[in-house]
Length: 524
Image (cartoon, rainbow, N blue to C red):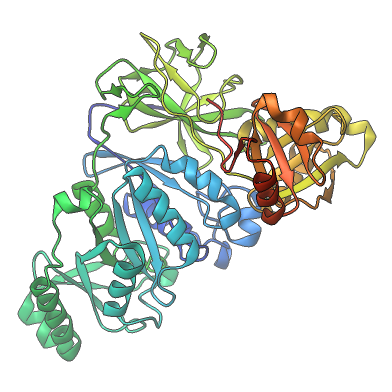
C-alpha cells in the first residue's frame, strides 16, 4: 500500500509520562479514536487481545512497559497526525530525549492517584528546555485518586506552569460520570464499553439536563468551573505556546474517556511545524529546500525482513520517494527509494512527506542518530546530545563460534544508540565496554543479540559510575591517574571512567588544567 500525503496541516507530538501512568494505553486509544484500529489491546494483551500497536518488542509485551519509542502516523479531522510513543522507564530516557527533538508539542500524562512523578518531571524539564508546549492529561480518573484542585496546585508548584483546565470531572476520582466542557458550559457524559476495547459513546448534555441527572456532582463541577475562571485559569493560546500555561484534560485512557477531546484539542491548539535553527545559528524555514533530522535508528522490528530503519523528521521542504538526498556529515548521497511511513512496526511506502512528518529510510546504513539529510545547499541541524552513561559492563560472546555475529550485533546496537560502545587497545575488540544510562539497556542489548544474531552475551559489571569527556591532547595524562580508565567511543570521543563522582571531583580539584566535560556530547 502506498501512502500519499497531501498539503493537509500536520501535528507532530510525543506522549511523555512516568512508567505505568498509561502512556501506551493512551497512544492506542488515540489511534482507536482516529479509527485507524478497530479494537484496542491492553498493554499485557489481556483477554486474548493482542498487545498495543506501539509496543512491538517481546520484552515490551512480557513486561507491559515501553522500551523503545514508536512512531504512529494517521489522519484525523483533515490533518495528518504524527504521534510518537516514548519509553516511560527512566533507563530509556535518552531515547525519549531524542524523540523530543523531533516533535512540536507534547502530551504529559499524569496518574490521578500519584500526581507528578520523578520521571515525568525530568521529561517536562526537557520539553521546557526545548520550548515545546505541553498539554496535560489527568489519567485514570475512573479509579480513586487525588482531589482535582490538589493536582492543579501540584502541577503549578512543581513545574512552574499554570494549569488551565479545558474540562473538569463530574464526579470524584473512581466515580466518574463525564466532564464539564469549560468552553461550552455543558456536560460530556461517557458510557463504559466492555474492557474499554472500543470507542466510548459520548452524550452531550445541556446545563439543565446535567443538573437534573447528576445533581450534587454537577453542581460541584459547575462551581469549580466558576472558581477557575475567577482565578484566571482559562485557556490562553499565546500563553500556552509560550510555555507559561498547560491546558488540562481529565479522562481515562483505558476506558477511552476524554480521548476524543484530547485529539480535538491537539488538532486545534498544538502548533504546526515551524522554522528550525541550524548549527551555525541560521534559520531553516519550513518552505526551504528539503532537510530532515535523523532522531532514531532501529533494527529488528520485523524478523522476516531483518532490515534497518532510520527515522527522520522532515523539518523543511517536500520529500519525494526516490529523490537523492545528501548526508550532511559525509557529503555523500543517500538513496530514498524505500522510504516508508510507519505505524508501530507496520509500514507502507510513502511517496510524499511534508514538514512534521516522520519517514523511515530502509537500510540507509550511513545514517546515525543526530544526522542531517538535505537537498540543495549544505545545511546541518544541531546534533542530538548523548547522555553521560552511569552504568558499565564488559561484553563478550558466550559461544566463540558466534564471534562474527557478536561483532556485527554490537556494531548495530551502537549505531542505533541502544548502548554506547567503548573500546581501548588494552581491552581489545573481543570484550568491548558497554555504557548505558540505565541497567535495563543491557538487558535489551543481550536480548536482541540473542534473538537477532544468536550471539548470547556474557556481561560483567565494572566498578565505574561516572564518565567525563576528555580532550584528545590530554588522554595520555588522564590515563596515568589512579583509579581512572580512558576508553574511546565510536564517534571518536574519549571518556574517562571514574568509580564515583567524589573521585571525579577530586581529580578535577587536583588537576584543574584538565578539561573534563560533565556531559558527553553527541555525534555532530
